[in-house]
Length: 116
Length: 136
Length: 96
Image 1: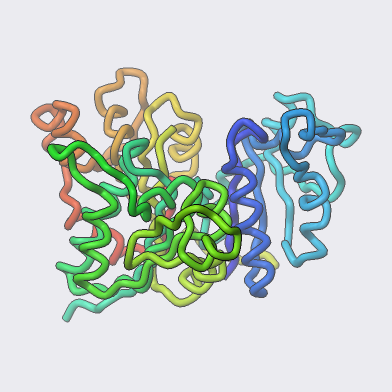
Image 2: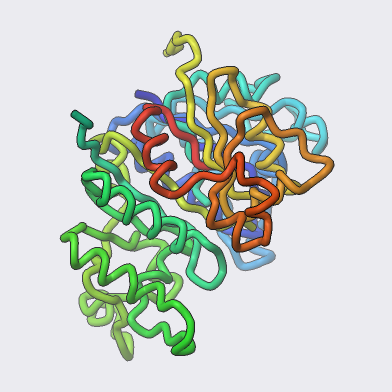
């Protein structure tokens, strides 16, 4: 039974996105099928060139890029939100599948979970 | 004959910053009234503050950590505060106090500190998983 | 990996105020057979002229009463016990 973890909050201003990533990696560590969907302001987690050390935080970029290796099935992003925030293949981390409809995407998963 | 279902409750909103602990407690009480089983209560993110032994609200306000610990104890429901969420926010048990040489510990019984594996287990084993988030 | 399933009737529990992005996101995923329960700040959606809520949407009575909305929206009001019943009836539940 596959779980979709949804990140709709922007990075660095709050910790919910990090907590969502931890949940996703935990599911993968226990061999539970899991995917991550970034939507709304949450797509900003996916931008390359983040330097959060400037605000005393760790980058999630490496963890996100490594997520498939840890067993996370898919990294998904709402294409409308990506467009809104000026994200495209040139400035997004690799391995992201853009989806036209987050509603349709959510409805493909039995469990849809927010970290906060 | 109504079936007994098993539930995991996840609380990510803090008391006095959200209604999450209150809504969750009301739902939990009705789950027990309806003869369901609560497998576990899991505190995550800001929800860990519900497990503080040091919260001291005014006497004429509802004491959420105490209300929860009484409910959990009365019904023997396992309850966990996620270690990663708890430590950084200053919620520690005696073991962590010793490990990090901290001046005090403040985990309220019967909560225990454990990892996200407890949540994963709940999401596998329980019939239903309900989340109580803050609303910011 | 694709799980093919017709849309399982889903219980949505939404606690965000109408302007929160998750409010609209939740409404956007509702299927015809789904049940929406408004809790906490989301009950304001009933009072909000600009919210487009589905017919049959429900709201926690305690949250309506807290906000002085109980009389206006008695028809939609449900108890925590009713909410528990709804969780029994739905194998798919999304807490927004």
